[in-house]
Length: 83
Image 1 (cartoon, rainbow, N blue to C red):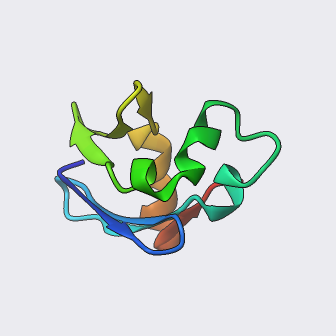
Image 2 (tube, rainbow, N blue to C red; image 1 turned 90 degrees about the vertical axis):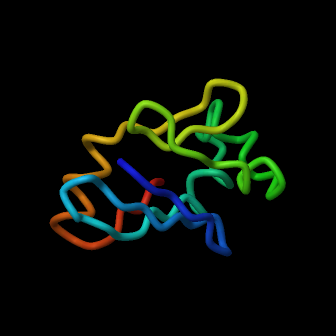
């Protein structure tokens, strides 16, 4: 992953080094009782701090998303919806 942009509604736009790009929708996940560590991202100020580190979307507090699963889903569907 080479770029991430924070969008409204707990969404991200991401681009990978092979040109694949698309959206990650985390709205359902951050509001879910099963959100676990990602519950912290319900705070929009924290969510807005997303950045790329070592090829993964990362937030302060050592939160990150698996880039491989994200890439595969976006390549196939243009969007990755996390629940």
